[in-house]
Length: 130
Image 1 (tube, rainbow, N blue to C red):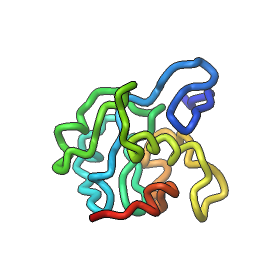
Image 2: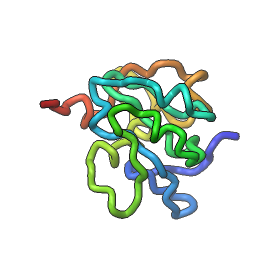
Image 3: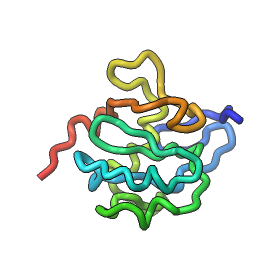
Image 4: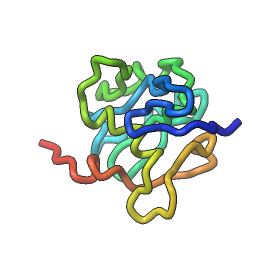
């Protein structure tokens, strides 16, 4: 079933007025992309950008299977205490038109339908690692 709501860049569901993003992948994933999280995700909701992975906030079922599988501890639970810009940027990957694309990634129903996206949000593209 396709999601019919509208998400803001912060993962807030405009139609229903609720937060739908529970997990996000942070800066530790940039230029690492181990992908072990994709192997344990039961709903195929972790998408591959150019430099990092992104969890679709609508398709994620909040099971948390991805958290212990990440060797760099990049996956966090998003809540009102979340401050990391890369984590908060996660929904942007799905709601905005990324470089070289004609439309947002949206909610294709799993990465097996969408394939590798291969580009990132502006924030991640410009992110400088140490």
